[in-house]
Amino acid sequence: MEDLMVGFEKFLSFGGCIDFPRGVSEVVRVVYEDIRNSRGKRMVPADFADYFSGNFNLIPSKRIGDCKGLLVGVCYYDDNIDTRLRKCLDHAAIRCEGITKEVFFLSTKWNSAVIDKYIGYIQSLRHNGVLVNMVYVSRKGVVLMPI
Image 1 (cartoon, rainbow, N blue to C red):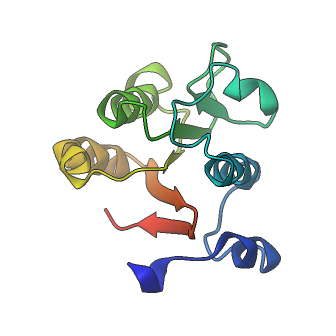
Image 2: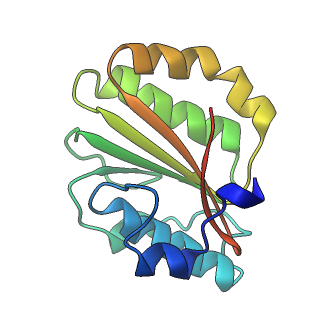
């Protein structure tokens, strides 16, 4: 995994080795800064979505907006990764079926058992044209996780 890790500052200076859609890199930057300032060990703040006005849906969010083609889910260390991932997948498959075409799930922790639990769901979404990406963000950098 170390070979796949991209240092965040290097990631930014080269425009990113991971081809993030517009706006997603803003969210990654905030997540990374929260980790550097020890906020990433808590839960995602309730007002987290208030910092962004991009053309994408964000989970968690207090606002319920129109469905967009892009969904960004964020999970911090003290959040329940199972619940947050399920909410993101349900958003793409049920609430915004046919509209959401790409999901980025950003997490400051990784739990393979939880991901394995939802692999069939993820494969089904992919089969229906939804790109699902898992991104692990740590103090060391950013890595696109193989799923």
